Amino acid sequence: MQEEVPSPQTALTPEERTERMARIVSSKTLEGWTVVDRNDRDASSVLMLPGKPVNHLLHFLVGVFTCGLWWVVWLILVLTQQKEQRMRVSVDSYGNLLEEKIAVT
Image (cartoon, rainbow, N blue to C red; front, side, top):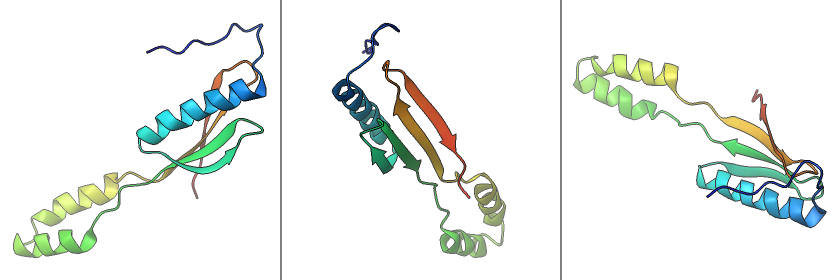
């Protein structure tokens, strides 16, 4: 389903911007993102996608039972684990979606 975007000459009302922002945030939450901050006045939100933690105790115990062979897999999981991500999404006055990645420190 493709969303209709108004032509560049037509500015959206604040209610239309808020409605469009709500639809965008709703679709992002279905992808696993959570809302950290929301500003309806500016039609912007900050979203977070949590990282995937590694269960170190479990991997250590599996490594003990496999005489250390599993520790290679454990090391690969630790080095490639997904870190937390954040992004700011907003809708401008013409209904265009703006996404900005935010560095997590």
